Each structure stands twice: as C-alpha cells, then as structure tokens.
Image (cartoon, rainbow, N blue to C red; front, top):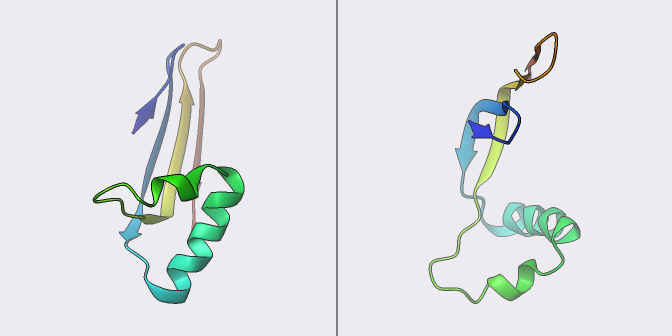
Length: 75
C-alpha cells in the first residue's frame, strides 16, 4: 500500500521477482526511459531491480465527495 496526501491510497497484490539476463535488460530499458538518471545508480552497492506483476490493484480517494474507490483484477 502506498499513501499520498488528501487521503489517497494505492494498493496492489501480485508476483515479484528479480529478473536476470535478457529480461533484466528489457526491464532496465523501460525503467531508464522513465528515469534517465537511473544508470548513475547502478554503481551503488547492493542495488537491485525488482519486477512486480500486479494481479489486483485498488485506488482509493477518501478525500473526494463522494469517496472514490476503483479496483481492477489483472491476469
């Protein structure tokens, strides 16, 4: 679960793993496209890349009137 200001939260449930080889390279390509400074962090000690494949996601905004809750089932 991740929370923000104004009573907003995101929750997810899924499968997490540590990709290797070609899968890791593909994940890094996507990550670096979003975060161009990412390659600079690869030299950090104990850095790792975790891939999460969500199966269920819920966004809630309890600060809205009426409150907003959206839920999705994935794969």
